[in-house]
Image (cartoon, rainbow, N blue to C red; front, side):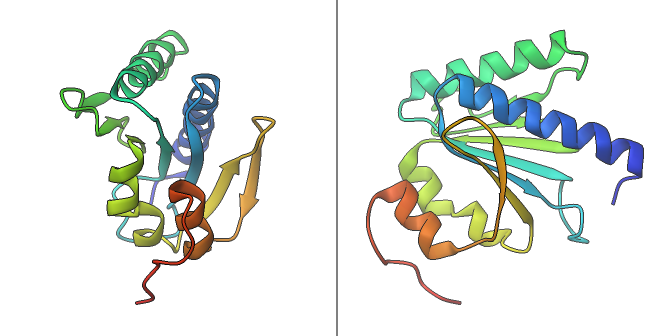
Length: 150
């Protein structure tokens, strides 16, 4: 786990990236605080859905440019060729930009269900939520059920 100053910067960066995702009309934007999970690969995940590969690339480019301009540095970027799942790795914050079928397949929210979740609401504001896998599945597939309990 990172020290308090690093966690504060990571927190600001995570919400900054989520705001950009909201501006670029991505949907189902979640900020997952992983700082209480001992084996997490980062302090924060930002996960969002884009409907097309063009939208995914545009969002990745916007986050890359704006984060540099704001002094957060540039992330390592993977997945722009197919754009089914683009990963922007700032080390303490990892942004996952996914197409709907990819997000539904990997279910990162369920995998990291012990995280503290915030969702960007319709007004672009972060709201703390309690993790509910059935609700999340329905939200980004539009279908009821199909959630397997483990």
